[in-house]
Image (cartoon, rainbow over all chains, first blue to last red; front, side, top):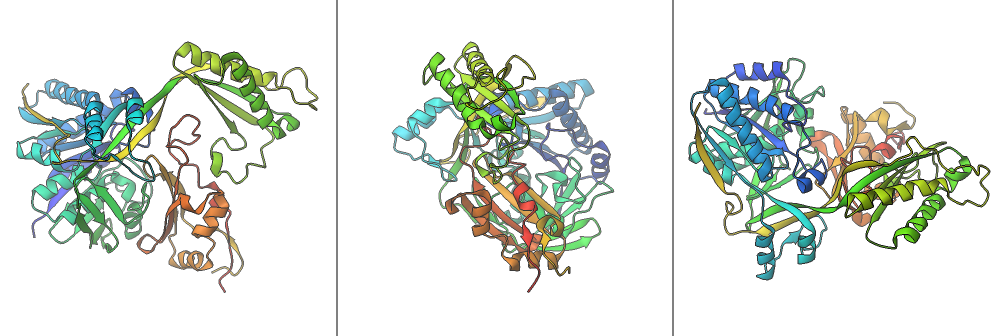
Length: 453
Length: 110
């Protein structure tokens, strides 16, 4: 029976380095592909909006170097998806540059380097809206309008298998992908080789987070997935880990609204009838996933809008009476802000740690605050100077809050620092939508070059 | 099987929360013991209705509630009021929202 074997060393390349020993154990088994996803929208809208990575270049380079050297040594393709956390054009260029540098550093024999971009021009979306196309909101969001588009800083489209397949067809040995669905990094070469779509997407789904599908818990360890025309087998490479029925079935539900459905550009993977069995001590065998091609060609879009520059202040509270009336302290602070700066042109947020700072509206114990609180204040405004002023007024004025029966009249809060701190600009996710396309490749231009020493 | 009531965190192997995309937080309660899983499912202490009460949310905010046999798990997903990482969001990853589940009291089997 024909098979292909896929090695994945890291579920979010760059976010923390891969573990070398299990990677080398996996490489020694001579896999047919070495692949990893490098993206996540877990990190919030800041990196997409600000066009940065959350990961230091050293960690990104560490993993790319291990993967590149192993892949070139074995003569097998290396594939990366969603470069640099967000998969924006600058992140793709960053990874492409790292690959070129590594090739030179190690004097690698010539190979073909392919990449694709995922950023979408806002004007293209505006034209689509004006032409009557609906840019449809996901997960309860409304459809995109031009005002929200105007507020948006940057948009990426989430690719399916298509640009990867095109680059493999063009002979790419190394592929750096822009934003894409995690699973398609793995599904693309399997589908291109003629394996069933359902098993190919399942392969991607189970491998995308590397050792998260193994137990005991231990991230950044290598796993290998093997696809045949009948099943997918997934094996842990770290000696202390195993892929069990429980760990593999359990992984299907990780980070997703339900454990059964995975939607990608091109269709929906259905895992309802998956059957899991222990194949050997470290391997679980999976059969039964199904794939339903999409009725309409739609591609997901992610976008981040800038809210403003940001400063942060902190204030502690220990007086039980003040704790019981902390909402009045905050109301006083807001009132002082309004008197100084008016009603608009800025935002202020108060997170009350010790009460509901972590859970906000979901906190069931909001009426039982701790014996001390920390209020974290965020001032947000168009300029840094204004943001600093907002944070400063809001934090400082808590000190002067007027509570009718407070005994301590020398200061209403405690300061760890009598200053406010600059923070990264504030962004929000403005696009979680889908766009109709004529061709799944139209948003993802591909490029290929020969890398020579 | 113990006869008396037990806290959910004594019966489950894993209780966790995490973003499911930018607009939702998903919760997983995972068991390593089929009897414990079935006991909790039968007890009804984890249902759309109890989640509504525990988290003080309207039923519409529960976008999924699944008893997942292959994973010996109960899973539900809540819609966020604002997307993850919006200013003021105290939990960008949604990773600390499971705490109220830990002490849920599971009654003894009838």
